[in-house]
Image (cartoon, rainbow, N blue to C red; front, side, top):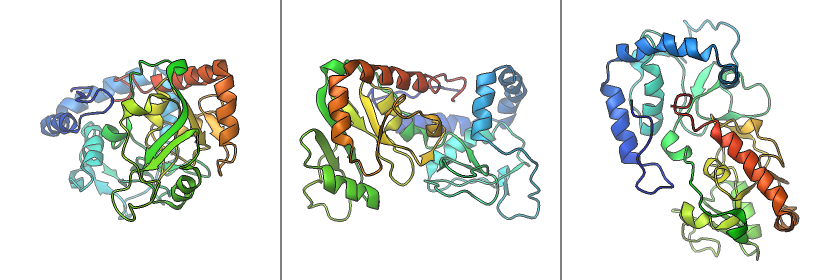
Length: 303
């Protein structure tokens, strides 16, 4: 199987290539995948850190009787849906298993915990989320890591953010800070009221990498820019995350992997000023962020 995406834009994954790779996987007979499964399980059993990750993604510890539950479908019933990137991502894993096995899955931005163990992209961090089994879904959009050529000292002394503002907390945030002198914030909505002063043009990832600080703000679930931002030489500002994905946002340490902001962003000025003066501390956090990102760059453990 092809393990990496070809990138037309070096800072983005190529969707055409993602679909081409997915079609190859779709057409490959399942028995070729299943031959590799026992070997992969044997190798995984010897890797303690990998086992820790697997147990973090899947916290189920007891056998579930699902024979009478309509929430589970056999793998043979798994059909292509509107969310094609989710479908193809999950399909590549299902091909390793017997088609008579049953699963429950949910696609999209999932912020609740299902009543039965379910495969999904995102889950709440706090509380009992045992039934939320994390998978690497919608990878072509979310798993982008950049090759940042600029050093922290070379970047602009501002915080940057671009994104859709449809959720109440994002709308409140953008109204409050779009005029801030040390911020370059803007919504990039495509529907609704576009005649607001905080509606701005999109910035490419390369353009955003010119800023010392990048804001990650959750939308329907996780902040979609967090992964590439943490792989950059910019410093990530973020409130404590409420949701997590395969990227294990719930394990990120405040003021170690990212700069923690209050939920109302009232300390934004203070944090900007502090890290402009304490470049050494900013670079320490950036280095820690890079260590977390490295976990997800090994294609053998994150295919």
